[in-house]
Image (cartoon, rainbow, N blue to C red):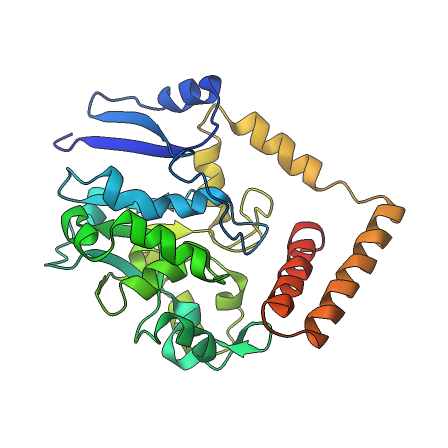
Length: 305
């Protein structure tokens, strides 16, 4: 009750009806929900690396510009659930750092020999970003807009986004531009829910998964999204909140629709196309290789998860 929650939703085409539904969730006078359309700001076509990414992912690059008159701002993706007071994160002392985030546990030092993009290992890929000592997941970032803009004005970030077909899009851009200038937040503030971590492949993942109950924020970042795969670890937490919203009927209907099997002919066509792209990704080089790799991944993620 002592804090004021000014929630700004970056958007492109949310309908007026859905905006009203979202606003109806504010049950207290110290909470406001506003909408900020960034379509004109991002009127250029930017690289989309996977089916579960959207053009709106790039909107976080505009945080410094949009909130330039604020002392700090907390930005999150749409696939996170906070189970405690957001001010616990918002009030973290990040000193003079322009940006704060949690380390990407999948790309931690001991995992950098893993293959990540075609034939590249994590460490090989990170050379494109200047080989940062720590690579960060930017699904949640806390920024000091003034210091953020001194290092990375929006025009620079947008230009960097156009230079490469980045594997993790704007996340790679931020890691490249703010290399070694991040403040490292506790992993509990952006706890990643992804099967790779819970398979116990190495001690890092084992230790990480054991801390699941101490997390403040759960991030359902896998290609298998929690609204389609409700049995994910802590998936019931996300669904418990979904049930309290005016969107629940739509979410549940989409889940049922998702379960319908593909027609045989359609499935065969997709499998042929998938195998073709996978083969071409093996025999091609450079940007062409990456493009076929992305197309194969898109089909796999979207239709054969």
